[in-house]
Image (cartoon, rainbow, N blue to C red; front, top):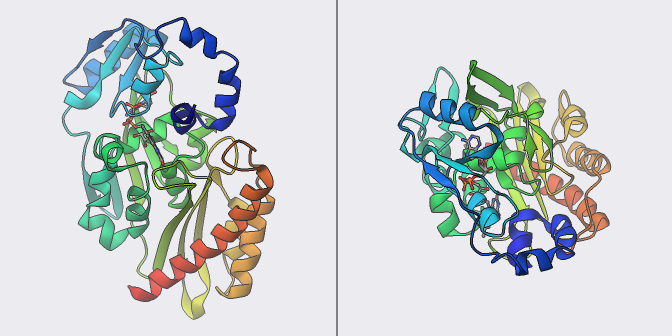
Amino acid sequence: MLLLSAFLGDETVLVCQGFMWIFDQSNSMIPRQFQYVAPSSLKDAVSLLREHGEDAKILAGGQSLIPLMKLRLMSARYLVDINHIPKLSYIKEEKDIIKIGALTRHAEIGASKLMKSKLPIMLDAASVVADPIVRNVGTIGGALAHADPSGDWGAIVLALGAELVAVGPKGERRIKAGEFFVDTFTTRLGPTEILTEIRIPSPRKKSGGAYLKLERKVGDFAIVGVAAQIALGDGGICVEAGIGLAGAGPKPIKATLAEKALIGKKMSDESIKKAAKISAENTDPPSDIRSSSEYRKAMVEVFTRRTLQAALDRMAQR
Ligand SMILES: Cc1cc2nc3c(=O)[nH]c(=O)nc-3n(C[C@H](O)[C@H](O)[C@H](O)COP(=O)(O)OP(=O)(O)OC[C@H]3O[C@@H](n4cnc5c(N)ncnc54)[C@H](O)[C@@H]3O)c2cc1C
């Protein structure tokens, strides 16, 4: 059960409990039979997805997909492994946009000098995703496409106002992070689309960001995670604010009203407290074995306050 809850969230696990007998009768740690294909180009991968439709699944790091297949909570007749496609793993800055290839591993983000100097919030997240083994294999693209509401990267891309690039049969399209997450484990990606890149605007000079996560124990998914990125103008007035929440609802949440409450105001204890309150008021978190809804809501407020303060402290250090 603990293993299941790590992948699915506890609500789903409770539903699954009633069906455990099915797994018991179906040799549950062995996936159903599937064919493995490893295309060497994006074009071929998209063709395979189009050819096999809903029967095909993309394999990136396999850290979510393979366990789900083994537990027979997900099945695919064709696994399209994108690990052999060149140029899907990189971190670079071009014309004031920081670009991350979808196949970039969590650990690579955590070790990136560019991220350390420009977006330390990314290091915060990369250091708390799961454990070192998962971080060495799992990818940022896989985590975003998987869209676990308690996943760490969802909150980050929402706070940073990122754009996600997807390639499909009709070519490339860009999806704003704020529109990417539809529901639990559901995104705007179509079954024949591959997430290829995450684009983040390079931060202004006077800006700072942080990600703080409340977890039951090291390596767990978040009870609550809060990402915040702010930029200040003259006189300490907040000119940009991005706040993303993990574990606070059925999908990663952009705390739009809290962001609006900060913009145009001088950053102070009072404005931070107010934004944190608004952030919590506008969530309706689930109750599960990790935590009650009330506790999560209270922690959204506490962690929004702490994260905004941490973002300010970081700015002061730059
Ligand atoms: C024990 C454990 C603990 C974990 N703890 C955390 C945690 O604390 N925080 C956290 O955020 N995550 C956690 N994870 C999840 C981890 O981050 C995974 O790496 C991530 O969810 C999936 O990435 P992946 O590359 O392994 O994707 P895969 O497992 O290969 O794929 C996941 C899903 O995304 C699809 N997919 C993959 N890549 C693409 C793409 N480029 N385009 C379109 N669809 C794609 C797949 O078809 C599949 O449906 C944990 C995982 C494990 C096993």
